[in-house]
Length: 248
Image: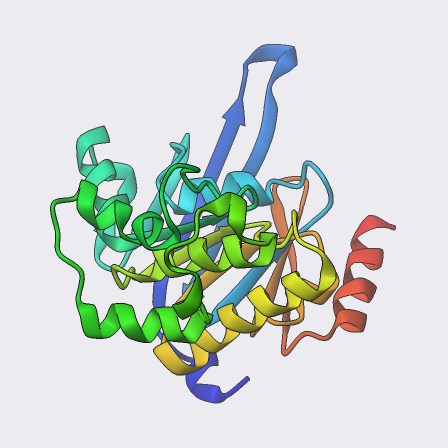
């Protein structure tokens, strides 16, 4: 990791974020006063044991879930002060999402799936940027294919291109290689890393896989709703060692 990445200003910040599901004896404290920032133009992985709060943190950062205390800020905008309608517009215009399940519409071609969010927003694509994204993900000869005609790795690359097309400030990736074989997963992770290096994209990824996390510039570890460790310049071995220490 370079010093410019380490010292880059944050794209999204959580400050003293607390999230509780349920009440009384049944209450689950998913996040317990989490404060963390994610630098612009950097690739950050969030890891932790099952139930550690990593998915909840990502959902709060992305404005998909509310917080009970604290704040989440994207750029200069505090998400926790926005109405549902304002949040919907912000997610559409300034945030990209990549999910484990691809979330492609089966009746649309790859190109139509890539363009769908812009069409729903009533916006026209920047064709030069679109061509760049499509060539970067290697989909030029697959644009007319429907999802059933694509491999899992190709479907996830369609999802990546869709997330990148409107140039979001942050892309949130939730277990993006969870449904892929190791070769396809490697292709997708390599693309995500190159989108950070070559396009200046900011990516925050939740994963349970030490190999996937090693593609990131930095790994943030959670346990029981709290951040317990961070790792810069991760390798599969250093990630695994840190996870073992947290679980022991």
